[in-house]
Image (tube, rainbow, N blue to C red; front, side, top):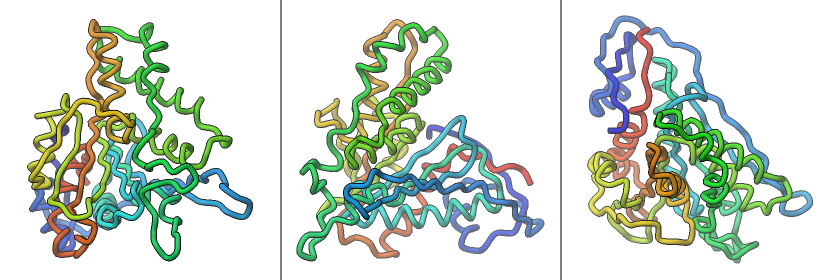
Length: 314
């Protein structure tokens, strides 16, 4: 796993949560009290540029834990007609919230359950069109902003032989460049992508939840992240991993991880890791949405993405 921590709690859990915790091995449970703490959860509402008078869409970002430091980012329904990821993300929110109310999360988790409010609202003759933007005809998982040239032209003076410092400086520069690009005059779909990248491109782990029309569970990721991501494949019981170099078209996962890979290739004399490990997770077929089918996925997703989380000894 990317993060390892021995977690300890001293409160009484619900039977369902206790079973979940035992299954994923996150807790050594010591039952002693019913103490609960205030939640660290914050829900940010991002207003997208209006596509027409009287028409406004919003993006909701759910965050737990401190804003600085390690983070795990999970988004769903970028292709807005792919329902399984949306279902998983909403169950994750409930589970993370319960853990937070019991223990106090000290590393950041970000979940965007409806990552594409534009696609969610698109319907033509009673048919949901969630894969392509009707205004531009562009696939919502293509043409994401590639910051490689912007970053490599400015970052060299900030680099050193300290890997942690390099990650910190590059992340600051990523946010700065996205801030310069992010404008209310952008097209709505470009504004949405820029808003999501502000969280995803600087996260340690970025999971993009999709599904296929009819498929087994499988992953897409950058070849340079393998076999490091084999732990995730095992956790999710993924039966097929599609590993490749950058394929073109600028999909979400390649833009997030590929940026770090490109910077490292440009400056091989400095220690620069792929500090954003981004993966596209295909959650079987589009009709695979039953609670029974996805129950184990909720657990394995939490087991993987909550590893950055440390629960304070209460």
